[in-house]
Length: 148
Image: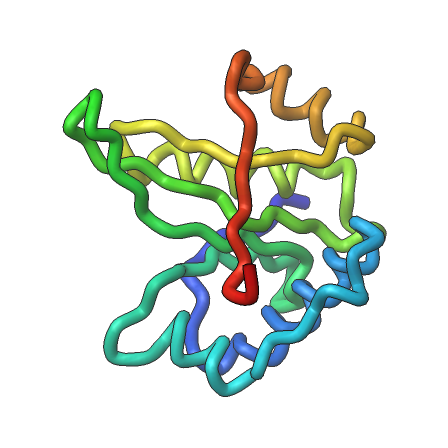
């Protein structure tokens, strides 16, 4: 059975927050989840949203999501997409749901679609390579936290 992919709506917020918590558990980063649900919702569905979510459903049950935002490449002079989070619930993996979410994102831009993956997540890396995505060579990701 294939999943239906659709843009998230405000009524999906609780499910999105649950998926983010599940993803953090999977990535062994649950101690870093510190969002305020109201602020999270405003960032997705408020007057000036900074991110969007695609929801994957099977028979009306949410099974996964892709949380993303627009980027811009100065070298290409073109908009792209940064995929912040891709998550499919464990019981629903292996059905092509993550791949379907990625294909939907790919169809939403003529530019680049970029994301990060944890080095130990070999199953995801295999899927990404199967799509033709490749890791960037020679780049290191930096993070500057507000308190630093």
